[in-house]
Length: 154
Image 1 (tube, rainbow, N blue to C red):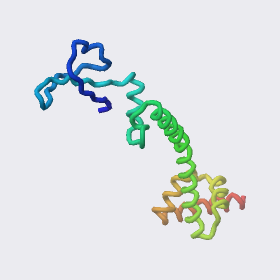
Image 2 (cartoon, rainbow, N blue to C red):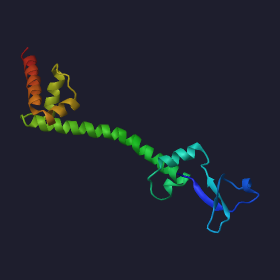
Image 3 (tube, rainbow, N blue to C red):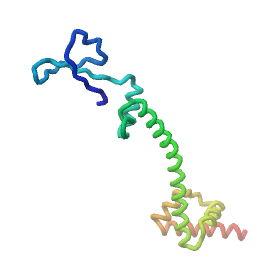
């Protein structure tokens, strides 16, 4: 798939030409042509070019620009795996904040009450409840409020 194809006439010095010998093929004039294919320099080159598939310009064909682009892509992937976690956490916070504001409470006061209550639900679960199951979220909110008010009375 990544090999370069070159057509040459057969010669007695067939094996001195760089490349791998393919099969003999006849051209339109009836004379045999030798098919030579060039392989990659190493497995590493093949792996990098395979990883660079879909890149624009020479970066998907030539090793040197391909390795630069692949390394940069791997840096972006590493960075964005961390960024994805941050983005999801901020989304959960927004959803919990929107759910709590419907019942007249702020996000920060809700989290403070949650930390002092025996309820151990994380932000992911609370955001899912707030977005998809509002009655369950309301019940959870009531339980958290009830446990924190009883602790204050004691």
